[in-house]
Length: 150
Image (tube, rainbow, N blue to C red; front, top):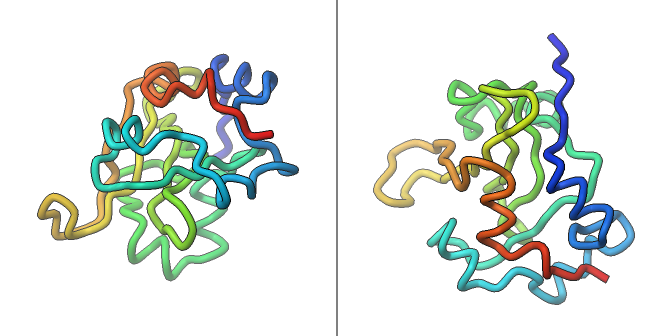
């Protein structure tokens, strides 16, 4: 079942104004951390690096179909609707800890969630946790309005 997911206005503004990576400059995040670690730790205390994906964003359902072994074993798919969860980043090189827009309850104002790996905070299984109730809250907490990817 396909769902028309509308990107948050704030995300579209960040993309349009150069405060979100493009395909041309996305790899610069591997050289220079754009988001300050102290800001990131407020939303994800155990993480040190944030890597934002350029558009178009990929639904977890597509990623699951490309790598069933990983997603079915480690993706905590029972906690999300894969067709309504768009991956917008992860936590750096080699990371399997994804960051996503969660459209499970809405088509226009998604929450921002991340996959927390077992062992973090004593969890025995991977699970999706809330980073921000809205994309605007996420963008404000990380001060994305001042991030530069060029």
